[in-house]
Length: 441
Ligand SMILES: [Zn+2]
Image 1 (spheres, rainbow, N blue to C red):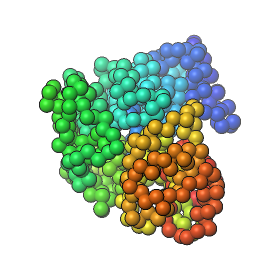
Image 2: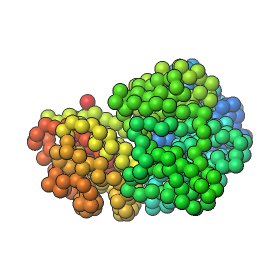
Image 3: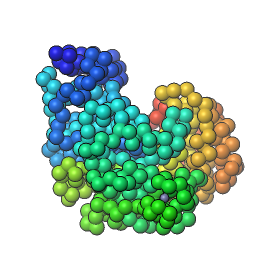
Image 4: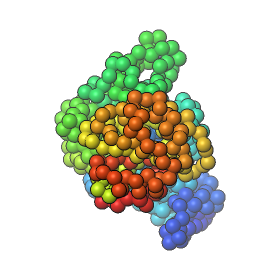
């Protein structure tokens, strides 16, 4: 009886919420109050795929859902990215019959890395994909190894882990475990033998804390590593990117499946590979997955084309408090090669909580913007002076830097001056303040 009431309440609150624009976690919260073990009581599909990690969860889930749906499977997933237990409960019950059966072939869950343990207390994912562990939201998450401990608690014994072999922190989940499927990128054209990031979280082995050696780095601590003390090393992979050709915007998986990239970036390749692996495990043929993923453009609004006066612009939505997402945007700009200007906005650090903590700016590789094809760099928002101080300690030519606290003033200035390409880099939390100044294409 409690189960039926919880399902009804969830559906009702969801229905009302859709008119008043309320978030997707509230219906689930009510359902959990009525029936705390509701997730255990419903009948879930045979295949449950969960995705967690610091970066790329939403993009990976979106790609998996798209491929599975195009292959004729019915997929229930948290499309709004509401990824804590309340949001997952809303999604599950929303897709349920009144008798408590989820009407889908596959349940696909984007799960918050810290709160996954509350969700997977009630059921085990068939496949649990862990993408990466990076520095992210220091005030909330602390060090990646602290997040490691939180995820570790969430892993049921009977779940098959699907792990990024190139990330030593992620690989540690697979240590002394049999049911693991590994994915990774082979040695490729973007690799370096010397560490080039601003900081190196994997200087020491996560298993024994002795110095770790790398044969090559793809970026930051992602690459081929080995600890000569305890033998912890990058695993051989079952799903591999065997060739990366960024000049021709394409990658090859397992030596024969070519995928054209809509967004040229080594970071994004991992999302594609993780999604490819998940879809293959869900039973879709590899040829079909590759065809469906060719030139796939993400719909989650992280890459937006716009105009501002005579300027053609690209908005690269990044994440504050997450240096790798900024590195990814800066690298994209540095490799564009065409004359451009860059706008960087840090106005509200988080939309979920208040913090003035800006140490993460020092983790970002600002040297990437030291290239000659960048004409001006506009630093904007409440934290413009923190940005300016950070930029001082970089290879950027200081005469290119323009500081505007007001985003509107900066955009007004740019609108009436010149016509070079523009790149805007900021977080979801500050996205709207910039969008109100531009024309979306
Ligand atoms: Zn070791």
